[in-house]
Amino acid sequence: MKLVKPVAADRLSELLRQMPKAELHIHIEGSLEPELIFALAQRNAVALPYASVEELRSAYAFTNLQSFLDIYYAGASVLITEQDFHDMAMAYFARAAEDNVVHTELFFDPQTHTARGVSMETVINGLHRACVDAQAEFGVSALLIMCFLRHLSEKEAFETLEQALPYRDKIIGIGLDSGEVGNPPEKFARVFARCRELGFHLVAHAGEEGPPAYVWTALDVLKVERIDHGVQSSKDAALMQRLAQDRIALTVCPLSNLKLCVFPDLASHNLRQLLDAGLAATVNSDDPAYFGGYINENFTQTFAAGELTSQHAYMLASNSFEASFLEDAEKRRHSDRLSAFLEAF
Ligand code: ADE
Ligand code: ZN
Image 1: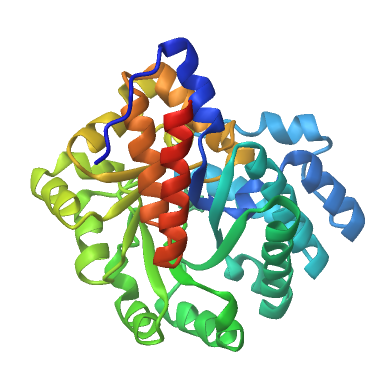
Image 2: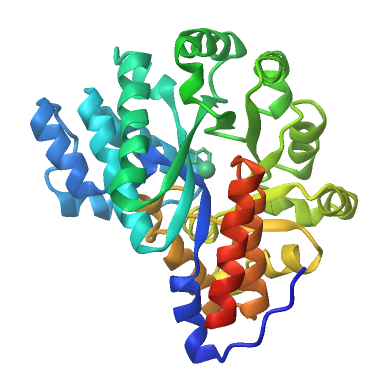
């Protein structure tokens, strides 16, 4: 790993903001800001159980993952048309570009929408058109990862896969999200095996609230290439070794972990421990509209609270390109630009 010159604490937050980076863990439905939720509710004549933007925002006081998911799925109910999905994603791309995100891989949850009668075609075409427009408008490249909701059955995941296959050229990978505890990765063994045969990249949320055992089965049963969150891995020394040895990326989301009470404060977060143990950790925003910040806010608050340096900043951004599902030449182009940026800073 390249060595980076030290940067004084007062300039580090500027480096973090300006540094080119990839975001690999963003649920696009989690980028819906309360203002956009209300605008879309009005456009589509959807009734909301909140009287105002302020009342909705004040409901964002979470105690764990499930308390968040209940509000998150309610917020997504305003998405009806292809244009809604497009507008939601464009709002995220504009914000991500401000944070010097140059590449992003978006999670989307089709079952949240198909269950309400919105077609797979509407969801994917709206998001895909936004990905094309993001390159032209913001110079940000974007890929789509379709997630199965793990609180639903494997049969429902197979049905979702079937519905998505006509659009497979618009989907780079498959993920697994929603309530983790009690829904281990192995519940989805067969559908992930099928996705693998079909040539999709594979990722899964594991070790967010769930135990290290779920990270092991995400790796060994689902055969995923990246672990989303994975912060509970530090409880298992053998797992830490495995993740380091195989350079399995963890897409860590510090503000999400804080807001969902996975860690009591950012000073207690284990990001530095993961990096110093040789793991390919990255920093991401998860559901930025709900957790108090986009990717740069995650970087700056975590660095301010912990003892992280310009070397860690480089590792995190470098890992984000290395762990992406871009072609090798694109990864190299981004890594070279990152090195040039740091040299000139
Ligand atoms: N869906 C949206 N955000 C999530 C998270 N942090 N964990 C699991 N599922 C999610
Ligand atoms: Zn997530």
